Length: 130
Image 1: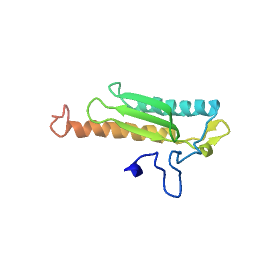
Image 2 (image 1 turned 90 degrees about the vertical axis):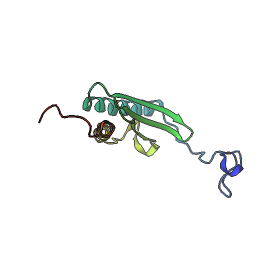
Image 3 (image 1 turned 60 degrees about the vertical axis):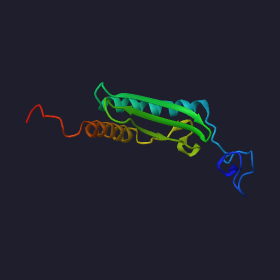
Image 4 (image 1 turned 45 degrees about the horizontal axis):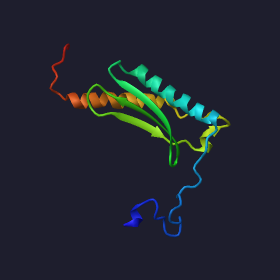
């Protein structure tokens, strides 16, 4: 049963009671700000693609594995969609986050959210025009 807990350790890799990934990246305050700016840009671009009925949010948090960024969209009907990533120290050029194709991520999130609405609505809707 202890093999299922993070405290048991991986035989031959991690001792019991120690973290498996002791090399969690520590970002400087400038790198954290760059990460927040990048995630905010993705959220803003996603909002530009969608009507006001869609709720777009973003979050940057420190996870046990290091910093984690996420952007999520809650469509008016259907399931929420999200995109997230964990940047590594190699993803930064000095203090600036190297582009993660913010526009492409925003476009994909918007398309996925629109698809959720379409799937939730089904084919039972009468078209308003032809």
